[in-house]
Length: 141
Image 1 (spheres, helix red, strand yellow):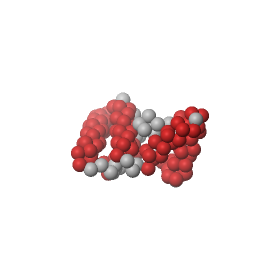
Image 2 (cartoon, helix red, strand yellow; image 1 turned 60 degrees about the vertical axis):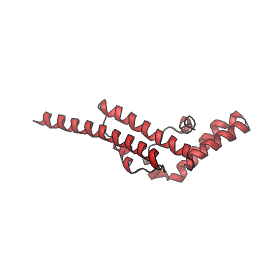
Image 3 (spheres, rainbow, N blue to C red; image 1 turned 90 degrees about the horizontal axis):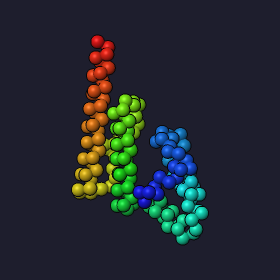
Image 4 (cartoon, rainbow, N blue to C red; image 1 turned 180 degrees about the horizontal axis):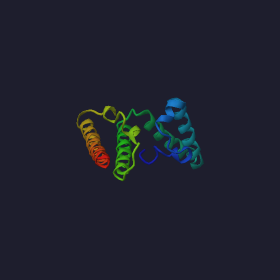
């Protein structure tokens, strides 16, 4: 599932979240499903069906595994955004918006672990923002 969940991006590219604003979530999901099917159809019916089932499971987020993959995918994305910001990139706010309020449907320790990871990433980002803000103030002086 972790390997397959972004396979449609091979055909569609990695669409930003803002694309949903213009196309709608349903259209985006239909396009990704169609792209995924195009990719796996040459594998033969049983394997294509199995992979399509795993892809659908991820998209529906009804299983623990699918929610774990989604959480890991977000954490990976934020780690990349943080690395870019540490290198001086700016304008990546859209990746961070609403992160702390994301609900992956975890209970108990799993919820705490994911929440802790997200909080640590946000704390590291705040350090970068603080440092760049202070540097900007110093340049103006």
